[in-house]
Image (tube, rainbow, N blue to C red; front, side, top):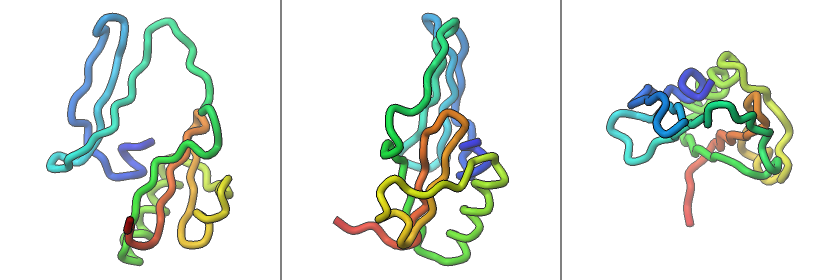
Length: 110
């Protein structure tokens, strides 16, 4: 879902590293990545809260529209934000495990 929805590439993956399997996603020249791991034989629960967020700021309208459409195509559900702030200029998407991604239409500033 994250690869298709956010346009990430598989940077690396591993299997049975001390009982863990994983995939590392990101952009090849990015200074960050997301690492998804699974401990073999363990059932993982849903997200701890609806306000655990991964937020991406997209300034250009076309890029934001395209990214929002990609999230839905990838299987994310469009949901109302727990904190209404994110609904003003963004959209919140939830994955199958209840984790949320916000695509904010705008620029981030401190």
